[in-house]
Length: 540
Image (cartoon, rainbow, N blue to C red; front, top):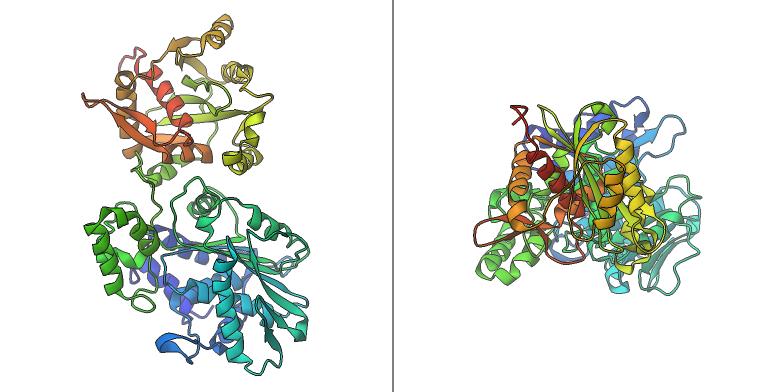
């Protein structure tokens, strides 16, 4: 590979610190070099150059760059190389099928993505190609379409080969079409998408549009789905769930070489008011957005706290909640491991069970202490009827598909499933205590006690939870906690805010009733059972 290529230099300079970048971009660059060395894949420089050359043909049509060629910035070249450079040796197909790009506003991501759409439409060589510009509303989708339409007019002003209509572009030479599509369209079927561009995904309420477009690509040899967005407010929504999956791939917790994720964001611990870190979420800082503009917006947020969340999400690409979470997400991600209870055979184990009242999420946590760390394994249960709950239907469905969730028959959680799991665990480890809350647990405790399980009441009062809460915080922040690799656990931690009394006692709480924290509560009950057990110098 030509080491002088712009994309190669960009990746190298990110990794050596010449270019200031956040954690996720560094991991994306590391992954780029890892894939180059992977014997399963071929890197084709000429394909990258083909795309770059095509984009240079396009002409800007507004502002100070009007009439000038579309010259790619280094980060955009890197994106082109990552998307179009890798091919599978076995069948010659393009490796990357899915793209997620997240950064602050005014970075040129819409224009860049529009250029990629036109490449697939015009220059990729596919007959009867179908390219869709999609968004949550027609108005949003038409922003990218307007760019495509103007680019088309710049390269074919006489409409000899390309014809731009109100909501579509036709390329007659290959009988290919680019169309506008929105989530609020009445008809969402009959597609055979070669590529789709889904814009501002953070505003999506459901995955319906994405699912329809993705499922329509089954007959294409080299399909491509591109999601572009800025940060938003809803961490329960489909965008943040997809983003979470992307960060797990970048972190090595999940494997998916067909995904390319480019997330420009600040790192945990960065001061959002510090100009030195703005480049991490604004890769086009000084090009399409001026530092003075960001400075002005940040000052506005400092002067008016009501503007803070808007500035953080739009100008600095920071996902925000209305309240501050207990433990920053990167600590929980760092503590996650691919591990099984079977690795700790014949060791002491403490459990905690957070029983739901009716049709809510129920959690069962197992804690295995070692000299190195505290290892938590958490199981989740949900009654079948809850899968139809409108607000969480898609989220619960995804958890179930990937095996993170045990679904029990009926309208309420069947506690027999939990009891059976507790009985099974005794075949592997020594179950010392099972912590439970007295409230609404009478029959469960009777049944468990009859089977010989060591049940112990654990009050969820703030005074009682103070000790395990502070201990779990200490364990996580000192890198002495380990959690099995379950996305629901990370979801629960994201939703925790702290309740405090006048004596300084704390316990996890949730800002809204709909935000689930059950896995955290069950873990604290298991830890409470452990802390109350007599020990003689072991670990503590």
